[in-house]
Image 1 (cartoon, rainbow, N blue to C red):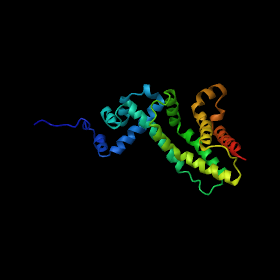
Image 2 (tube, helix red, strand yellow):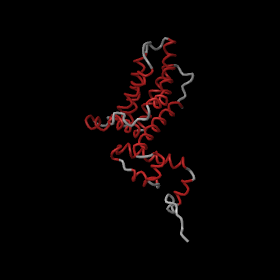
Image 3 (cartoon, rainbow, N blue to C red):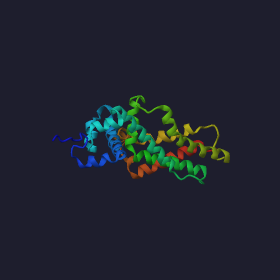
Image 4 (cartoon, helix red, strand yellow):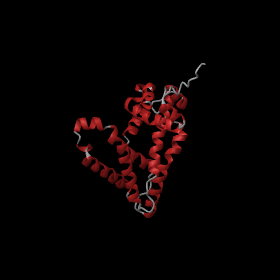
Length: 221
């Protein structure tokens, strides 16, 4: 009698279990791919390495994401999605506008510092001139929450007379992101030239305070 084997099973028990949990398989692939893409970029990443790290197969990766570029695009979208979800979880209701805006700035600085692979992915995608970014309308929708948060804080501050009018939430988001982004994106070259004192715990606390101070000085009436 001819025995029929499953090419995706290959008598591997973990794979059998994962076949019963497709979301778990997909999320595991995204997690491993994010780390490897952030370290090696799109061109330097091999699907075989991702498959080996997840104990799955190239075929399964292609099943979920079509090809390497499709996987890379979904990693980007998922990275942005996770950042937005963390911002949405901020507890800002009832806070004075200046306190709430500083909390957004503090969160952004800390989150960028913790999620250095996210910053590296953004750096890599800028090298590609945003060629692989998900659909612009989709990204705008997913990123609108942080704009809405800042917009509400800023409008409240203007109404109370503590913030000066004439700015937009997008402008404020740009300033907060730029200051927090540089802290990760240029860390290697900056510390090589000027030393690492700004990147130990004390130095990072000082920079974090400065970011909040500068944003508040920018908006205060």
